[in-house]
Image 1 (cartoon, one colour):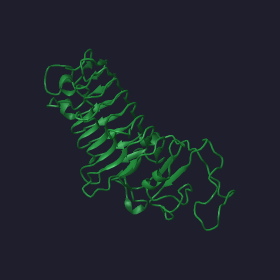
Image 2 (cartoon, helix red, strand yellow):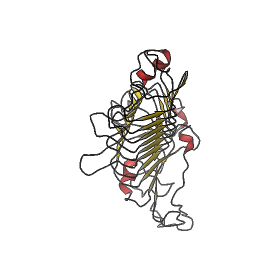
Image 3 (spheres, rainbow, N blue to C red):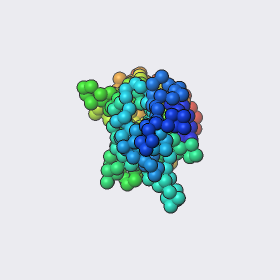
Image 4 (cartoon, one colour):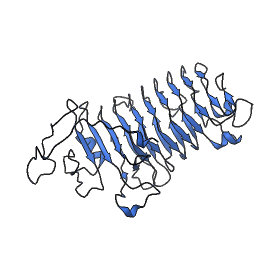
Length: 331
């Protein structure tokens, strides 16, 4: 499962018992100790910790920060910084009376390039629970406006219906969300859009679970600017209402090894473009070895040609329908 696959090689280990810092000042210990990275720091975030405060420097696990936003503000470009977000007991079926019940409930802008944002939940499969803070649940948890960022190990939930988990965006002038990696995350019900890409090059989305989203799992607005050179692989999509991989303007990208279940397609109902859609750009995508809960072209509602759409310049190779492998692009 996604959240349990996070491997966390931290760039810094601190030993306060050897480098105690200034008495009475939390987090004043020597930062540059036993480094496995040339310059990076780890900033710990844990709103459930009794010593958590955004006035801490965040580099000591026993004196963490409260917010991810403060951790981002402390990061520096390409220093190798890691934001380590501790686990919580906010999963929707957990017993909140056991404590550690506060989720990450923020809407942040990841605007520092070269930062790794990781949810540390070694005892669970879905990841560290993160919800948007907007009262109606319609906000965006993480807006990415910097290059070379990595996000992993979170379970995004809506709290209330609505919301978007991750939006990687170009502002039309200077900020780009290129080279983004999103992996080992869960996108749960009540989130409307899991991941939205706007003019993102060289993104990789892998080993994620998208379960019963109210709208799109992975989405690119056809009215926006096309993304390119992306890899979308080895993800699991279950009953995403508006579609699983709906990236109609994407170009020169690789979509491989995904598993997509939608009961409309499986049951023969109308399921237009609820599977994979790469139809409106310049194409040159390779879409291969995906597993689809639809039938080969009949034609009928819910078949391969209804469930998916391709650009004429794409190469769709050996995708697996319920009754056999495909040999053509969907039309």
